[in-house]
Length: 343
Image (cartoon, rainbow, N blue to C red; front, side, top):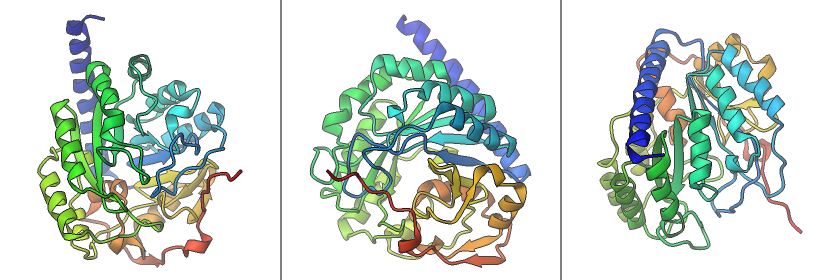
């Protein structure tokens, strides 16, 4: 494919995606009885084993595509705006392209969160053809270490291939905290992302409960510098992190279970990746009544939560919808724990 033709296709895709984003924003503002975003887990297995991550194992089989189709269609009936695939490592699913096509038939936008290791030019073109709208990669450091192998040194070639071939929006997320040894690495990663034409965000790694680990002084300085990189975009809403970076509770209305749904590989709806265990209700029985209940429910884990996707989606309704019900965070021993297989 010629460079001119590829550039023209990329521009058309960008215009089309922005139109659908505007449609999603308007619909989200007009009505609160539907999810704005849902995360689906198509496979729990991952090809990496980052020390801070509690969302993977090394043995799970992929969820059958027929099962995923049923779940995506149920989310479509709930009028879900964005459906994002994460894991584990979703690129390990052998029928991922078909899953993305199913999402595009049932939702406004399709997203993918990946560690990037399995990306090739051919794989990226298949994602283009499937209709992917967003892809995010988190890069934890410049050089791999025993905490994380998701390093710029390993992934930079993948980023170059993305810059050349991807027709979808690419965001590179840097991280601070959680044992990442060199805070300055986040700045290096962010600058490289922008040089390649991607957007750049920064996240704060949570503990095993999805709760805050306060940043050290240098980490906080890097965080504030990184915030300058972030472009205006509805998925870049991270205002809550300003409080978190200072180790202070964030005052916000968590809409998990309502505007944001996390559907695990077993098809259960949870608040988020770090509160797997509540409400833990099968998606096939999840209704508008559940959405309305969770919309007005305060979550006890919210003040020190670092789960950025939930914050971003909840920001749609920061100005309305007082929360009159309460629920405490699920005790850690009652949550769904994911462990790698031991030999």
